[in-house]
Length: 295
DNA sequence: AGACGTCTTAGAAAATGACT
DNA sequence: AGTCATTTTCTAAGACGTCT
Image (cartoon, rainbow, N blue to C red):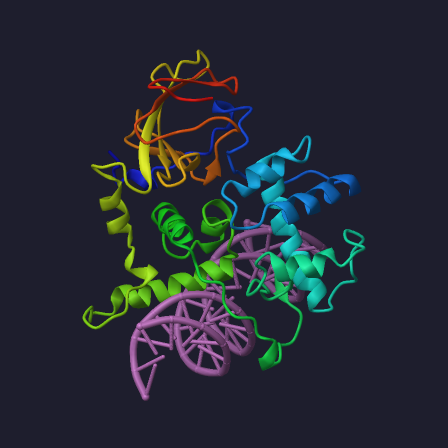
């Protein structure tokens, strides 16, 4: 059962899952060769944004790259494209074809043209009205991750919420979303309101977690590693609709539920979860399962 | 038409770095 | 360590597009 001790936070412990590629932390992708970029392009063209486990599949197509790497690389490219569009930097050598522009049109860049930043400051003037891109609606999943991040970091720390929870949104986007969320939350009249994603609150998020394996759900895994605390036990918040995606990992064995991995991620290839599984990790990257776990 | 959601922007506050 | 300048981040307000 999830408690409200989310504020007790310790640093992520990548050592717990040294070979896992689903832990999203601060690590940045390494240098990308031209060949890797080409593979990346091909993978993105092959697996569109609606494809379940898209990033996992993309990572599989690029030897040596993890899910974290490709997601991070994608984010970097979003920023590059924004700057290129604004005419602030020369067209990079990354793409010598029409790929970048086609990619933008075909892969959901609409609305992602945020204020182009150099050193965090917007450099370009405002777009003319007809250039304004329509907004990209927040998905329920993004909103729930936003709420989890909000619980952990509190109101105002949009940077960390963006960085660690809603990796698909910039801090500015998170802040804007939060602004309207709190307005909605504080507006008293609940009658005659249209249904809104903002009706999903931190409270309803908690309610959804139990007792039934709802969305997301919590499973427990225990560490049998000698290098870890003897009673290491983790609770993993998983998306029951996409059971191989992990929202967060907690350690409830000390000081209540400590959030040890405050990020969203995807389980290693071949490993699947459901809300009733429990796990033992040998901390060597493999996770032995119980209750018919596949890996 | 009005509600809603996303994006944009200006200004304020906080953080960081350079210099003495 | 203190001061100042610069950079980064956040807040608030509102423009704009979409939906009911």
